[in-house]
Amino acid sequence: MKFSKLMRSAGVLAITASVLMACNNESDEVDASPDNNGGNTDQSENSEGTQTAPKNVIMMIGDGMGVGQIEIARLLEHGKEGILHMEKLEHAAFMRTYSSNNWVTDSAAAGTGIATSVKTDNGMLGVDPDGNELDSILKLFQAHDRKVGVISNNTVTDATPAAFTANVESRSGQEEIARQMLENEYDLMLGGGTDYFLPERQDGNNLIEEFEELGYDIVTDRDELLDVENSEKLLGLFHDSFMNYKVDYDLYDSNEPSLNEMSEVALDMLSQDDDGFFLMIEGARIDHAAHAADFTSVWQETIEFDETVGDVMEWAGERDDTLVVVLADHETMGMAASEVMDKEALRNVSASPEYMVSQFEFDEDKGIYTPESVRSVVQKYANFEMSDENIDAFNEYIYDEEGELRFPHEQGWEIGSFIADQYGAGVMSREIRAASSTGGHTGNMVPVFAEGLGAERFNGTLDNTDITQILAEVSELDFKPGEIPDQTND
Image 1 (spheres, rainbow, N blue to C red):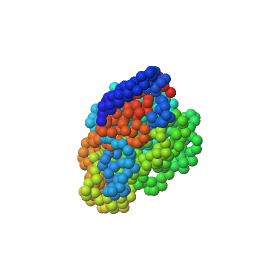
Image 2: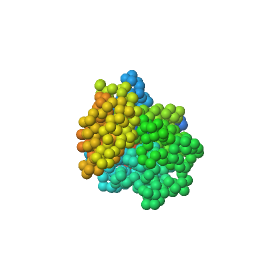
Image 3: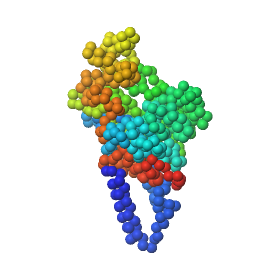
Image 4: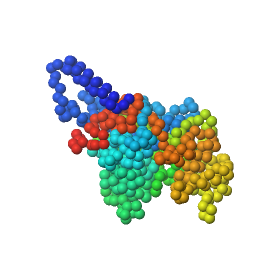
């Protein structure tokens, strides 16, 4: 159901309720002043003391997570009769994802549509197509003196978290996004991306030290995060770039926290504020795995995200003041649980394609990876022998149109496609991915799941610009798309 239809329905119900009240209480006068909750206020309890609006809103975004990714994870983890935590939420909807200038969105435009209720062009973050700055639902909660935070196992400055926290015309400006995070003093930021805060990227300034001067606790690994107690402001940066895929944790001897652990710390910290909070949790590497047609990592990353949903729902289930919304920003690579998909073989792949590429030997004289190393590494981690033809095709792909070597993670996309093809997994072709400006995103609708106060509003078919509108309305916070009113009622 479109938001405009929901609004019309809500209006009819409100008028009907007013008429009934007038009939039953002819001698009572209704004071419609803001002080008596006749307008948009933060009053969230009825006359009987029952909570009517969520004090806390937790938005969980599985980046690139369409129905195919969900079904692949469910089958590989639980089998055909299993069920995921997100599927247990009481209310569900589908959401359209297109951007202002393309029927297939990228993560920047998708995140902006979700966070601000305004469509923008691909590549733009927190601004409309003309470059005008937009306020997000996170900034709305912050303006009402509520705690706010973002979590991602990508860089904390990448597209999805930045859509809630920054305003830049290009998603590539992660240095500027880091500066805006410092300027706006959000309460909690956890994820990867240390490099964007360091002097080498910040004209000699060390933003981490500047955060510390503002009273932030700084943590850099799992042990430090789990030792945090009574933090008022928290910045956690656990990797120079993206955090590692789960399948690679042991290979890198990683001491990074899981998405579950970051979320648990965040909930403990933010919930100490009696006014409530807004928290965005992103399972970012679902999208990265999907770009690489890496079904094994799609499975493991989606399951980590889903287990985090389970933990969050357990936390929220002990309260009566919280709304949880689980959704995706878009779908990636048209992934599908094909009938011939070899589930057992995919379960036994023991490294990401990106890691495999890091183990190939590069012949500087010939400008290619040695066929022997490619064959042996893929055999070791993916359990099949690549053909000479496929190895030749891979060594051609590693160069872009200008003859420059592609980034290692992009080289891994090709290896992932060979593995998916070997094991009968349903995914967009490499040729279509290569021709796509988004690296293989699709315009497919994505699911939305919700539970808690106001969750019934998430039903039918929505647009990504409906999400924040609904969240603001059920939270009883006045909000015009992309704009926080100058005067709040806190």
